[in-house]
Length: 92
Image (cartoon, rainbow, N blue to C red; front, side, top):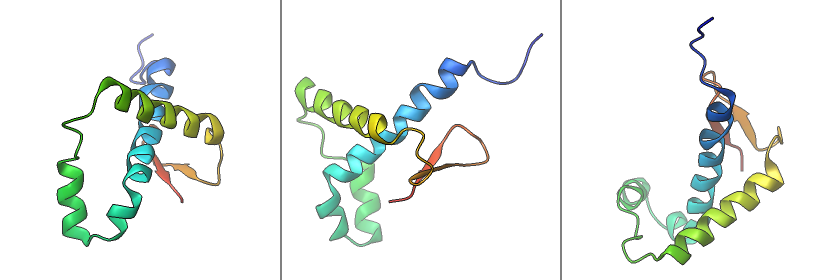
């Protein structure tokens, strides 16, 4: 029997973790982003200053995202599912 639903590992894997990676990015540059207007924020997010990042920088960001996920996964207070069911919206 074939279904249109993705496998559970895929559905709950990367897409769920991706939310926390995005949150880690936003927290990293939070102070800078808060001083920008909308157009500056959009330009900044389209060209993140990560060109000089090393493997260690990426490891730290992913580690922070993992910590966020470990602390808040399943908490109804900060994430609500959209109608698609595989992406969330942060309520900070």
